[in-house]
Amino acid sequence: MHIAMLSAEYPPRWGGMGSTVFHLSAALVAQGHRVTVITRNGAKGRPPEVDGVSVRTVRWAKIPMAFTRSYGKSALKELRRLHSEDPVDVVHLHCPMISWSKNQFEICKREISPVVSSLHGTWLGERDGLRIASTQREAAVWANPNDLAILLTGGYYSKFERAALHGSNVCVANSHATRQDFVDRYNPPNDWDCEVVHWGVDTDMFKPSESNQEIAIRQKYGVSNEGGKLLLAVGRLAARKGYASLLRSFAKIEPRTNKIRLVIVGRGHLKKRLEKLAKKLGVHDSVIIESGMPFDELASLFSSADLVVYPSYYEGQGLIPLEAMSSGTPVVTVDHGPLPEMVDEEVGRLFSMGDSESMANVILDEIMDDARLKSKGIAGRSRVLEKYTYDDNATRFSEIYKRII
Image (tube, rainbow, N blue to C red; front, side, top):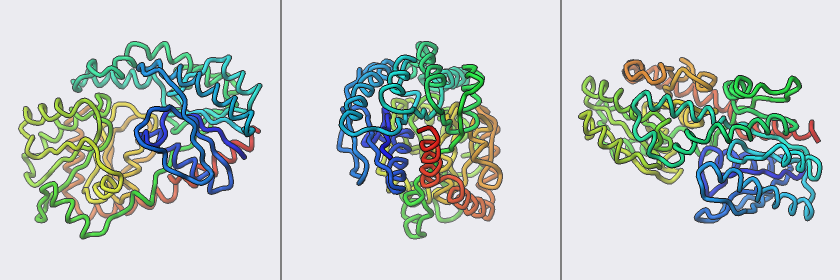
């Protein structure tokens, strides 16, 4: 079948959504489908070439939050053009970064094809995460234009999420927590059709490393071969990701084991603020913040770390823990939202969200037992291969497409 995939992110605009749409599209093609992606223009570089996947770009207003409406309008116009040239069997939207009204959903279903809406999270959930981050003294909650827009206009744009619930033939949430979030906030209709499909991970990219590669990476970050430990945190440098809380936890850990290093990898506006906080806490010499790196280097870093820490205040699903597990590295994360659906004591540990003392105690307990780290890493890789692959995602979505056509 011919699937039109509407996503505001697609490579070279990498991100959680861009990565999942790219890999899902390739996996659908491998199962015999054709995919046309309609995404935003203006990204630097070219989309990666995948046989069976074509990419069309459209204009959008470069205004925080408002882009979801302008992109949605342009995408519908391009979708009509596409359908007139090459009939579309099903339209797959990736929410909430595209905002369609009730009328736009009706036009799509009447003139083009049935609609599947993937629910990656809610604007109100993002807003709540930022509010919690503010109470937890995270850096610059009110300084970032995108975060400020979510705080001020999340309520307005949530009405388009409600439209997706009522206007789609079927919704697919990326976690049970996300599905429940929509139920609690939007009171969907009694006949609401919503399945849960956790996104997978690139198990070929994120995999256990060879020992010589691991040694070189650990040496790069000053990790001693004599009992040194490497902690890793990955994700956009934004307030809701919880990095200030992580640094405060690390300040409790570092004096108790001076052979530990913390590496944070992420793009964003908080690097200087976080470096200033690390200096204030007295751990600046043990903390390295990387603004970004190529995927192959990041994958090697994942597999070379002793432990991955993910202290986020809000996620629709959260792919970083899966990338750690796929790399054979245990992960510790918050006991909140969707994270406990993926992480437990077999593959890592949970700590109390926003509690730096709880985070510090869990990290210390985990890194002191090398044998346990190794067994959890093996278990994590096995769990990902069994439950979190893009091949499985493609199979599940193919079944959904066929059911509603």
